[in-house]
Image (tube, rainbow, N blue to C red; front, top):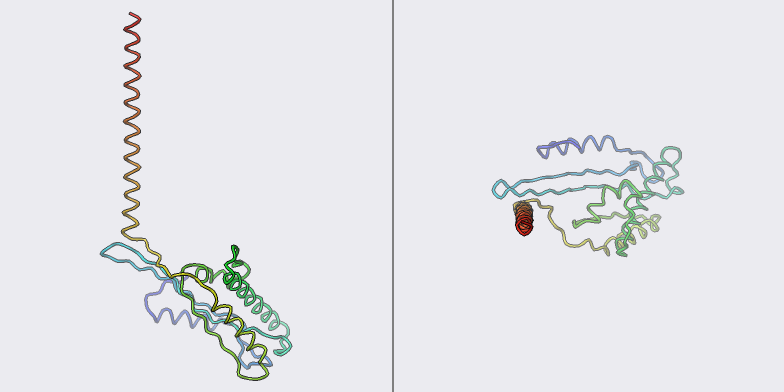
Length: 211
C-alpha cells in the first residue's frame, strides 16, 4: 500500500502497475493480457465537527479473459499464464454461484482474486461488472459462455450498501457502557462494605450475649 494525496499520485501508481502487467501475443490476440489488473483504493475520512470517521474501499479490476488453449495455441510460460487465468476466473464463478444460491460457505480462499474481492462481493457493498464479448462468429462459444456468466452475476443480491462508520454515536455508546461499568463497580463495593458492617455488628451482638 502507498499513501496518496492527489489523483495524480493514483495515476502514477496505476502506470507502474500497467508496466508490470504481463502482456503477450497469441494466435487469437496480438496484445493479450496475461494477468488480471487490480487497483485498490482505501479511503478514510473524518468529520471535524462531529468527530465521526468513515472508511471505504474501491477496487478497480480489469480481468484477463478466459482462454481456450486449442485456439490461442499458447505453450510454455504463456500456457501456464492461461491456466492461472482460467483457474482464477473459475474460482470467481464458484463464488458467484455460491452467493446466488445463498450458500453457507463461500469459497473465497480458492483464489487470490476472490480473496481481494471478498469485501466487495460478500459485504454490504455495491459491485458493478462489465462484460465484453467478441462479435466474431468463431468466438460464438466464448461469447455464449460469457453471457451465461453475466446472467449468473446479475442474479446475486449483495444487500443494501452500508457505510463503515465509527463516529460520535459509537463513542457515546462506549462512554455509556464504561459509565455503567463504573456504577456497577461502585455498587459492588458499597454492597461489600455494608455486608462487612453487618458481619461486624453480628459479631458484636454475639459477644454481648456471651457476656
